[in-house]
Image 1: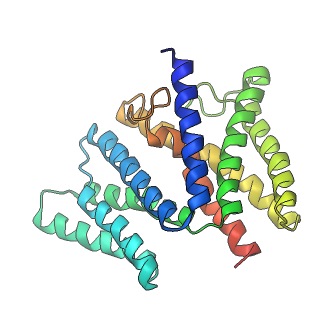
Image 2: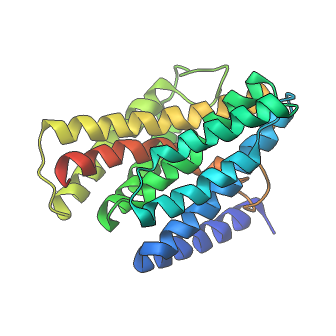
Amino acid sequence: MSDFTKRFTTGAIGIIFLGILIYLGGLYLKFSLAIVSAFASYELANAFRKIRIRVNLDAIVLGIVLLLIFDKIVIPEYFAIIAVLVVSFIMFLFGNYSTSDLTHTVFIFIYVPFIFNLFSQLPRKFFIMVFLIAFITDTFAYLIGSTFGKHKLIEKVSPKKSIEGAVGGVLGCLIITLIYSYYVGLNINLELLFLIVASSIMAQLGDLFASKIKRITGIKDYSNLLPGHGGLMDRFDSVIMVIPMVYLIYYFYVL
């Protein structure tokens, strides 16, 4: 099976699975996102292990479980961060963990499970907006960059990305997302334009951030879980950073 066939098959299955989750929503969606965040956290922990950083996965799993429980008993989700901190402190005091291990553990929990938990709180149209922004930004950045790209964006992190591609990604995302926003009934104003542009920029920063971690840890992909795509972090790196931005749109326009 060719790489293209693998990528296409995995992508098609992913889209179908995502569509089912969006349709079901509720606990099905929240639980599925918790599982995805757990696997993505493991991929990050495994990457950091290459540079001798021991992430406390037990604390992260506890935090994920608490996020699910707190949602049901109306306790603010940020208390899960405190719980992860406390467990990490205990492991630091009584276990063979360094301060670097502790900080990376808390970082991974906030970076992946905590942000994914925000994802599960978004209504359907904003949930779709996250993927729309990430996908359109990546698509336009690739098309414009491969056609007109001459100036490197951050060559030492991602040699193939260009400034022209980055700008094209933002403009393409702005146009398509504004059309979608109008279709779903959002009020089009300067605040929305700013947040969409910021979301597109964050999508690209998320991609670059995850790429830099791969370069630091010396890995090509985070895992081979998704044939033709790599790991979950390889597919969700830009999505992760878009989630808080779309949550802001939801907060300002709905809550």
